[in-house]
Structures are given as structure tokens and as C-alpha cells.
Amino acid sequence: MISRIEAGSAAATTLDTYARLFAVLGGRLSAKVYPEADPLRDEAHLRLIQRLRNRLHAAIRMRTEVALGLPDDLRAWDAELAVGAQSVKVEAETVLEDIQALDRRIALKAQDGQVDVVLLLVADTDRNRRILRTHREALRGRFPMDSRAALAFLRAGRLPPVGAIIVL
Image 1 (cartoon, one colour):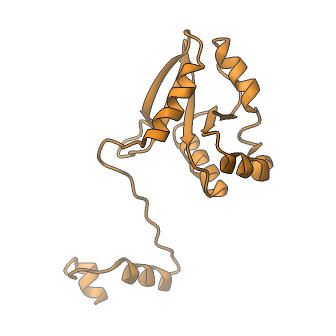
Image 2 (cartoon, rainbow, N blue to C red):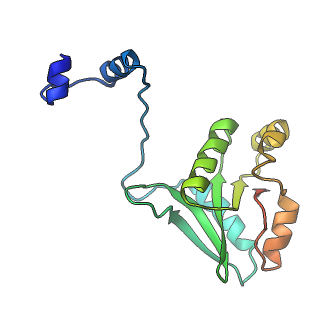
Image 3 (tube, helix red, strand yellow):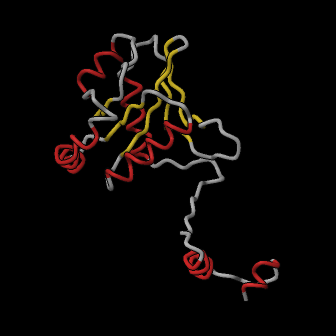
């Protein structure tokens, strides 16, 4: 079977088989899935981004679905805010789930896209507020600024100088 896999003639080899083969070799199989079609956003996600847009000073330009710009990389930021040559990226979440996974995903996108400032836009729900209260300190390193301060910058036509969590 291994010879057929190496020769490319094995029919319908499963991911489980590949994972076990890599494990024998001391490796671990991982996969990333990226959408190839235009992204579909649910109504709640679109409303969340619109709530941010409604709070921006007229001097701030907003683009949505901003690709990282790397060859063959289909990841995108939910939005980009720009004033002159400066910009910040926005990652929007309507439902907070795994905070560690979210933080890692944003960190990897920021690193790969060479982005210094990311704003985490979170829908204002009781559940999300409870999760943020519980896990705020775990996110403080990447997002030191809170909503009130970040929104003050944006209303004044300036971009926050550091990452922020904005709850709207």
C-alpha cells in the first residue's frame, strides 16, 4: 500500500491513512481549509460591520474582505480602516467561541500579512460580554485598548495606535 501511495497509484487513500503514516515517521498531519468562492456573510455579520461603519469619522475609509495579499493564500480581513497611508485591519466576530483559537488565528494572519494593528470587532451580546469578561486578560497583550477609547479615536478621524476590542 505504501508503494502504491508513493507511486501515486493508490485509489482513495484516506486522511486517516496519511495521518497514521506521518505518525510513524514522527510527523503530524494537519490541514487548512479556505473558501474558494466569494465569502458568504450572514446578516448578523453584515450588521456588525455596518455598526462600525456608522461610527467612523468621514476621513476614515473602510474596505471589506481585504485579502492578505500572499500568493495562493485565500485568507482575508473582514475590513480595513485607512486614513492617508496608515491602516488597521478588522476581524469581526458575531459569536465568540474558542478565545485561544481566535487569538492564534488573528496572530497568524497579522504575522503573515505583516500587520501591526488589528481591531477585534465583537457583537454586543450577553454571551460575548460574559466571555470577554472572563478572558479579557488573555487578549490584553494583542488588544490593549478597550471599546470606548478605540471608538473615540475613530470618531475623531484617527486610527487607534494599538490593537483594540470594540464591542458594538
